[in-house]
Image 1 (spheres, rainbow, N blue to C red):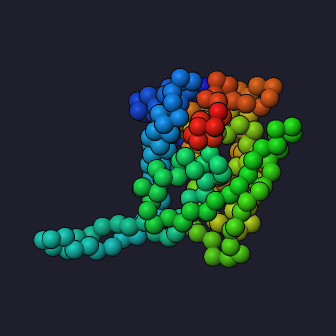
Image 2 (cartoon, rainbow, N blue to C red):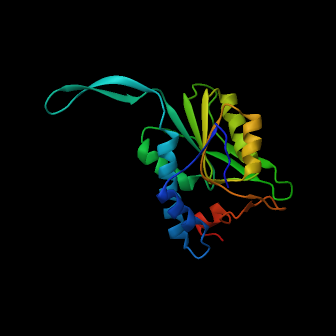
Image 3 (cartoon, one colour):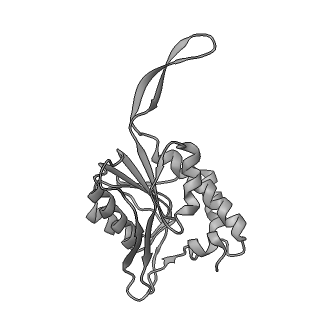
Length: 212
């Protein structure tokens, strides 16, 4: 599905299409599923970090000094437990000096509302940028709660990366947080009556951790 909004970036890449098909395939093993998640998360990390601020530096090559650029400021990777862990290593490979701040937020299956069960964010000293990771954006409840926690901490710039998103969840996020940019591999058709994404890919956490 095409969802056009200035805050939403959808991957446009042959490899993204390939790995997304692997994620959707119910016959793919848990190991194969994790590999597809990792590859898609790497592509997403590339897009999420495309325009991060840089500072000019001088570096010494084996032959001479030359001008270069390094990332400016501190960045936190914020996986929403547990499925967000499946995307974390891909981001850390590109951002090895990033902080990792875990948030435990699950969905109450009877109400579809978010329930917070773990967060250890410090009282002060927030990073300049935080990137929330969660494979699926369905109703948007979990990521909206995560954004509120990060804003309360004082993070000035928040970005969100997911593998697939439902238009309903995207619209909720845009309506409530017009300053948060979203990066996804695909926008799916809709949520069903149980608020699961269609066509979707099943339960990402169960498939990542082989608990189906």
